[in-house]
Length: 123
Image (cartoon, rainbow, N blue to C red; front, side, top):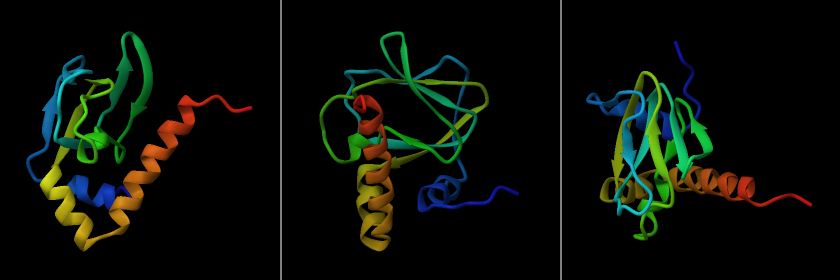
């Protein structure tokens, strides 16, 4: 049995109807609007800008979280890997959950901070 360590992982397994994708399916494209983030339940998702893979998100990881905070268009394209199943979290659902579990917002902020740090070269 998988050990669940974060609120985000718990949230990913609450949904009994995960979204399933075939390898290569585009979950969303850069430039599209969005109002959901996704939690990887199984498989993986590549985040790409053009042909460059920025990150591969694995089970328990999240992507698309900026859409819950800022209505700007998606900054990357998300492409499903093998055995990809996801839980979707809408903006209203997220806001309600953050009111009940404030640490959920901190977890999402940590994900965003790690991604920003990876894009900035260290000195």
